[in-house]
Length: 249
Image 1 (cartoon, helix red, strand yellow):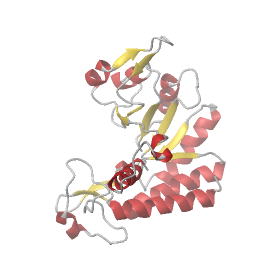
Image 2 (cartoon, one colour):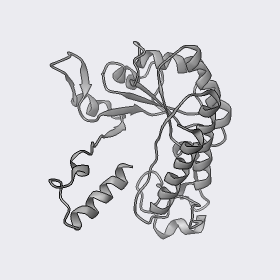
Image 3 (cartoon, one colour):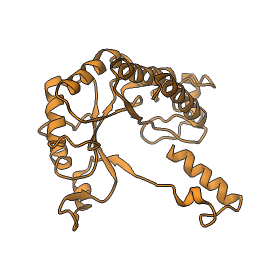
């Protein structure tokens, strides 16, 4: 959404529309988010709010802890547990159910609404089996969480040519499984975490153009993780809209 909004703003500016005479541009909020990975960096941006006395990371509105650093005794969890920002925790297929509940209580000890976001990245092979168990545990302990889906990181693999990639169909299947699991028990899918670009890259397989493994080398521009290109991103957006409509949310 943010990417498309920025592209629209750029088009408006090119057409002579400016911020002063366009209400929609003046009223658009812009938020930032990133993984709290390098703790010395994050600590350098952490301050006490003079009005509340609480610690905030002023480098971002919303921080998350990755699946590889989200253990109950990790320094990353200790850091985010002591700041007042909304906090996300990536949940992969290796999660231990007992540790899962401990994590929630450590990061959100007062069970505040809107404080804790669980970013599910189980992968297409585990979403149907594990997500219902996680939802059940949260309901049993009456914990306040926001559920979010990251269908990218759990579906990453390498081709024979060594390209790190993801398959569009796997991404869509995990999103669909995420929505269906919540629909069955009456809970709400709170968001989707995607890695995408408006550029016509060839980093993820499938989509409307039916990109194959041999196509990846044509424009593989990423220096880190493979992204959905503009066409694939729009297709995913429409599919999510259909899921929202069918869920009657």
